[in-house]
Image (cartoon, rainbow, N blue to C red; front, side, top):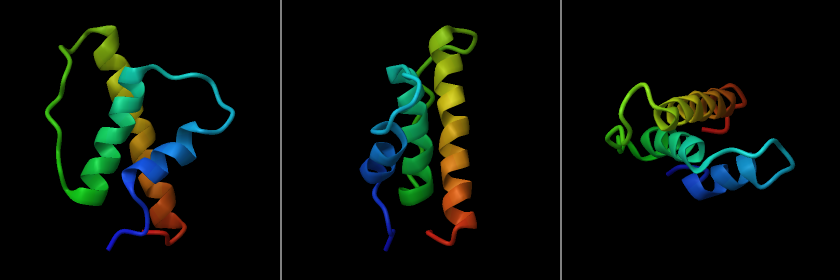
Length: 76
């Protein structure tokens, strides 16, 4: 069983003082955490080359960083 839920990790990442992020960025973070914790891949929701797609992909990068940090710290 996972030690954290996606919602808990999202709160840890975004319910702290930090630069604001778009809904698309946060959706990208959530998509990776959902994949890593539950094995559920979400379809890519944006057309490549759009600002929404860029934000989503940047969010996925952060989601992967969050996951790697959890692994490095032995939390997953």
